Image (cartoon, rainbow, N blue to C red):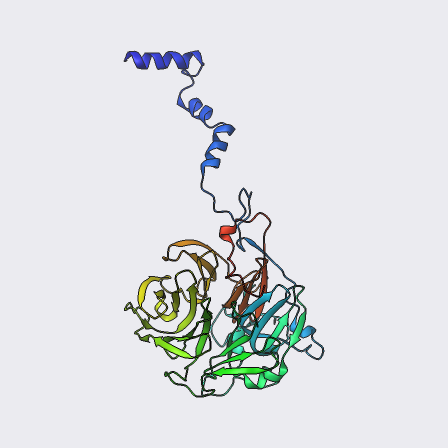
Length: 427
């Protein structure tokens, strides 16, 4: 035995540990103090730093289960509820637009029944799983086909656009526009417009409508309603909008066309780019399949495009020059929307995984949250999302058939909150 080993053994003997062997030494090294030090050194991704327990099921938020109030709370609307919710936009916490595809019957969850004609051990609905797919049940049907079911029985084409206050009360409705709409897809106010005109995209009408702030007067129509095309005067099922600070506007066009269209501040056509690709694994720059989202980085003018059916984000300069791209994941990945936060991070919602996803502007994955379900706080088919000036996060769900409001948790890490867009000039 070396002199160093003899010295170590004598040191242990003085502590009375040598005869006890290694297990006691190990126990000594596992004191509460050392465990505490180990825990403190572990990386934490809790939405609220220092949180004990929990799972961050709803990320950095608490859900407001009473927002909005039921659509059936409107006088004379007791038998009807929300249809497929396509979009929402918070002008401020006290005026939040909800856009939907008509209404569905206000019925309770049915009792489970056996479906022996389909096979053994099959029943519906299943446990606590969602029982009605609002996007399939709501009108319209195929672009050139009939609606599913019977009007005033299976669905009703009313309350396509409403506004809700901070308490969840439905405070504004516009029944005069219901008949004009066919498949309303997205609603906006340009954050750089002091007059706060309201923009509404209808993909089946191949048109974009611009209304006064009170939504009482239609002041502009882009595209030729009910007539599709891919020139400077037509769209083919457009989906979403985005603006630069000088009010240059970009249109994602769309479900059928495979391009981005650029307009100046006076809504005059400037240019368009994009070609039809070969889904689901098209990799060539500038080729699209379902242009289902557009967002801009105002500092650089870069345009981020959700190339949905190719499972990727493509990045261009404001004139359509390709700059970068990244994949959002293999199927079941199915990104529905993208949002640009003022802190220059890109958020996306993935319908296939029911998660909100945070990327930096080079595509590095930073954070995800969300869970599937029709309970308060669950996600199913988020198709629109927006953040108000207080940091409340709103979603519109096509499959669940509802809108929801998420309120930041006390002490939440700001990096895990969906950041608001640029500060509106009118806020």
